[in-house]
Length: 228
Length: 412
Image 1 (tube, one colour):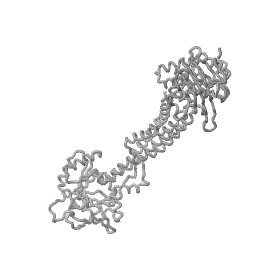
Image 2 (tube, rainbow over the protein chains, first blue to last red):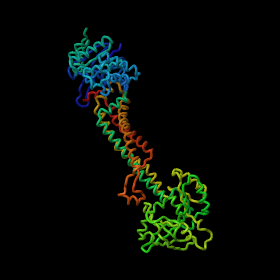
Image 3 (cartoon, rainbow over the protein chains, first blue to last red):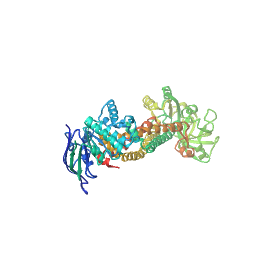
Image 4 (cartoon, rainbow over the protein chains, first blue to last red):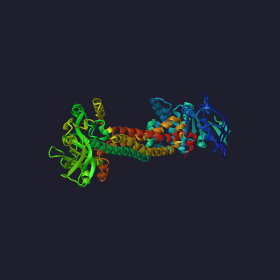
């Protein structure tokens, strides 16, 4: 089983001027198959923690291991390859590639993995069907609603068959209906396909659906609650 | 898919891309047209000089060229002449006797080179008959006819049918003089040449050059200069080399050796196109850098996202360079086409520079310039612009790959 482990992770922004400790000794273990929400007030370090776990940022102190890979030991280019193979991202503002259609956006990451064209296409279509966008495959992001764009982002995050999907406030810009719809899809993927989701959020609707809730306060783990 | 992304990316900001494509196209057009103009002008100078003055190849006795002394005539000239005429690839041959002397009228005198020619032969070599603007060309009729240029006639204050006196040394070294009657006024379009040359019949000149006491030479065997036109100018060097080998005692020169300025001009054509191209490309570099830099800076967040999801630096770099190349690839055919139709049109119809005709003629050029372009220049320009597009994209592309995904994603 693949596991994310952080040990004494410290991340300091602005170390030269006015240092801000975004993470202050975070110890955490997240296992494959979890549906975990990382919550906390603004500035508590949620996004920083996700960035560090996802290999977008490096900790100043402590160790991060993702599925047995020591993130700190990797060069920038290695990190890019690591993210490509092992981590799927869903960002807050629907960061899709504006010049590509929904299908092409999903195919794109698989292209980066040099997968054959036929496989890319079939998987992209399968994933877009799974998120309920079979009739929007050839639309560009500007022709989709916010909720639809986030569903494309989820399909894209799933495309490379990553070990973990990290979603940074995925519902922040969505209305209730779209939020419920997106959560349904993610919960189903978690239950049926055993996909691991880790969210950062302060959206109560998301917290309510999570099966584990880790609360951060001032860069430290304050509570860690596992529900039924 | 990356080429598709690059292609769609350049059309995200249509106006901006069209402006830079327009700038590149106009730059190419300008480089081609300016080069076409310069080439046309220089070719006009070279052609004028070759056709009216130097011809393709000239043969002399080597010492003759030092001082133009009449005693250094071509030995066995008749045999040499016949051998040359028998060469393949030769269009026309004119045998001349030449003397340095003075032409004088009641109003003044000028130093001139007197060329004794066989009228119909000379006409075939340098179109002298077509350059007669007043009166008639030399013929067998009359005694001692002479052609002078309009410029010289003005200086001497003479006109058609006026009498002038030529003074020169004969082969014996004595000064001799004879009266000639102007039958025609010529104008080659090259003022320095026109002012310093007069044409008479070779038989008349030779009779004066060979003193009565000299029996070693007949009038039809005294030749100082053999001027040759070949059928194809590209064969000039081959034919000249062959003649040089055949007549080792004679000096065989091509127009480039006779008039080194012509060679310089011909060589200059290539430099001129390179200079125009360099200046224009330098301006384009900054235009493209500016466009590509804007294209990078306005999508920092997107580039951060691409790197976050696993697009490596090489691919990001290639995508930016490709966008710049695509801008170039759209612009290059447009510019080449505009340049081609301009050069084709002006090449056929010419551009009338007669307002500057006087100054052009002083340099031996025609008042109507026909654009002309070596086809290689199109390739040169296309390759130059392509490389410029690549070069100009390097800085923006480096800027893109230096972004840190976390920071880029936070950009608004």
